[in-house]
Amino acid sequence: MMRLPMFVATMVGLAVTALAPACTYAFEQKPWYGYAFELESRPIVYYSSYTKIDTAIGSVRRPSNDIFATVALGAAVFQRWHVEAEIHLVHTSAHDISVGHTAVAARYLWFDDVIGDPLSLTTGVAVIVPVGEPDLSLRYHGNVGTEGHIAIGKELSCGMMWAWRWWMLAGLGIADEGDPWARGRIALEKNNYDCWHVELFAEAFAGLGNQNLRLTTPFQGYNKIAHRSVDMGAAYTCYLEWLCVDVTASYQYRIYSENAPEAVHTAMLAFRIPISL
Image (cartoon, rainbow, N blue to C red; front, top):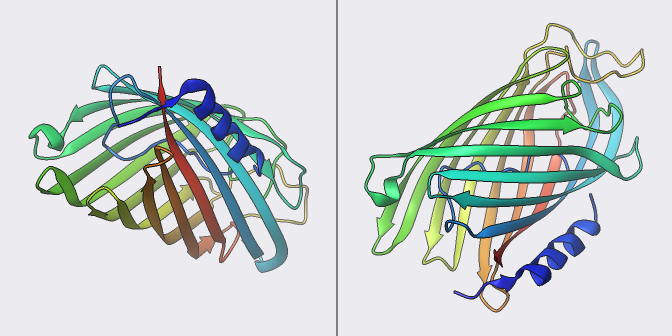
C-alpha cells in the first residue's frame, strides 16, 4: 500500500489542525498496533457545545462553543512497543486560541489476538502537561499529570480481515496537585472489508476529589472537584485509497454529568496519515 512522503503527510496534518484547535487525549487507545516502524500522523479537529454546567447549587447557565485540535505522531516499535506524542490546541468561549496541553505516551502489547492469542492486551503510561489557564471546558488536573491505563480487545475474523471487534479501556491518573481521576471506554466495531467501519462507544470520566463545583469564586481548575460524566457516541471511518488516508467522523452526547458541563454535543473529524520513513 502506498505511503505519503514524510514532508507531504506532515504538512497535510498541520494544515488540517490549523483550521481549528482540541480537548481530551488523542492518544491511540485500541489494543492493536499498525505496521512496525511506520510513523502515523493523526490530526484531529473537534467542535463542542453546551449551555449549562452542573454545580453545587444545580444547573447554571454558562453556554460555551469550543473548538479544539490535536496533532499526534506515533509509531509501533519492535512489534510490542508503541510511542506517541501530541500537542493540543484550544479555543473556548473563555479563552482565545492557545496551547491546551502537550503529552507523551508509551504502550506495551502483552498479548495479540491477531497472531493467535486469546485476546489483545496493552498497558501504557502517559504524561500530560497542561499549559493554559483553568477553563470549565477543560478538565485538567494539576500542572503535570501521569496516567496509567490497560486495554483489552478481541477481533472476530472473516477471511484475512476482521469483521467485528470489541475493546475496552480503563485508566487511572494523578497529578502534582489535587486528587486522582479515572476514566473508561467500551466500544464495538463492525468492519466492511477494510473499506469502512463503524463504531459504537461509551466513555466515562471521573475526578476523585471531594469538592463540588462552585462558580461564585474564580475557577481554579478541576484538581479537587468530584466531577463525573458519561458520554455515548458513534463513529464512521473510511479509507481514501487515492490519498492513502483514513478519515473518521464521530458524534457523541453527554448523557450524565455531575460538577461538569451538561448535555455536551461533540463532533469530531480525524485523519490517520501513514508516513514513509
